[in-house]
Image (cartoon, rainbow, N blue to C red; front, top):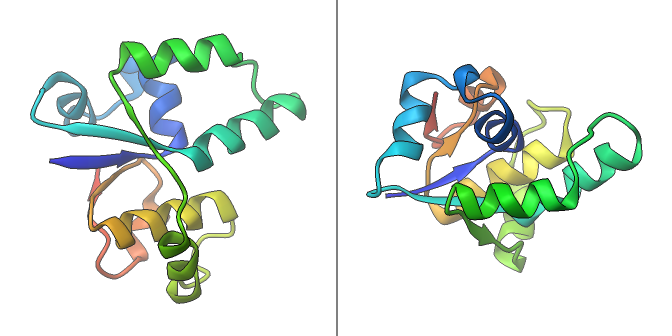
Length: 126
């Protein structure tokens, strides 16, 4: 099963795996899950690092992707177009684009952010 990780889930998995829920830990422990990380998460982390809100380095990022055996999900026109249908429940544009990607790809998103549960049709794992 394909799943999309939100940025916080990726950071937890790399830096503080104990913060992951039991369901999220299963996503990382079973080979039946195809774990994906959006290019949007790359951008979000780069911006947070530049603003001093994140100490995660590009090397940490690459190592995390390799260690967690993640695939990269690019942002496509289909994802961007889906943004027109995503309600403004979440104020964070990065998270809203992750919602749009998960909906467009018809895959669950792994997140501890309860706001994601407000989006109709979005399956959330936590």
